[in-house]
Length: 288
Ligand SMILES: [Zn+2]
Ligand SMILES: [Zn+2]
Picture 1 (cartoon, rainbow, N blue to C red):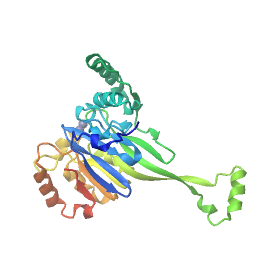
Picture 2 (cartoon, helix red, strand yellow):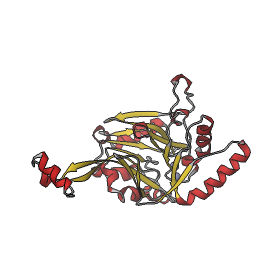
Picture 3 (cartoon, rainbow, N blue to C red):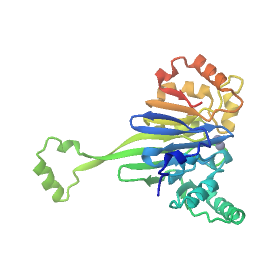
Picture 4 (tube, helix red, strand yellow):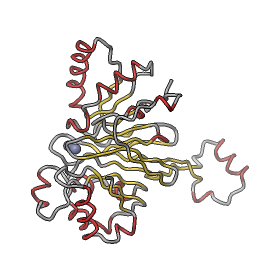
């Protein structure tokens, strides 16, 4: 069983906002120091386990960006729920330093809860490439935060005929292929990127983030009174950093999230509207 078959049994335990773009559904919620979780149902993957909506349980592969509690604390709950619901143990990719402590935490919770917590924890490092399927791969990049932290790009890959062979009759191409000549090359499209928590350097270090069709990023601070230099030390992005880089965002959709709890939703909307009245030609979505 991979999904809960009877949808009327889905318990609505947490806020989830969603958006569909170009055949891709982005679901999730993120506020700094509160909780962060995202899911891409079509790719059957999720990012961060700061809390876990009951409806996300059927997704069996997760990527954790870093070990701050608002991104990881629901990992035991998620693992235990899947076992209770007789689902396969999930695969969870984590920064390597987090694996051993999480294994210990799961053992301790097993003692308290008297239930096993089966899961496949896999270490990730910047530069890794994880194959989801023949069509999709995830690449990992380092971001800049106060603990080791990573961002992710989901690529769609297709094999395309080499340009020099375009126009050649099919039987000629077949003969070349049968003779062992490579007739295609792999083409990759960045469909989705998730920055996680990061100072601007983390974004700049991964150019594919600026190219991805959909980018989910943090803009934790928006008020002029919060100075961006100070914010960079905490490993976060200010609205002013976003404005400085506006020409670089080639994304079709940019989702800004992980806003500080210092701001009301109205204040965030007002401050962004003042500095960015066109909302990046309508491409910027405030995840509130
Ligand atoms: Zn965070
Ligand atoms: Zn963090």
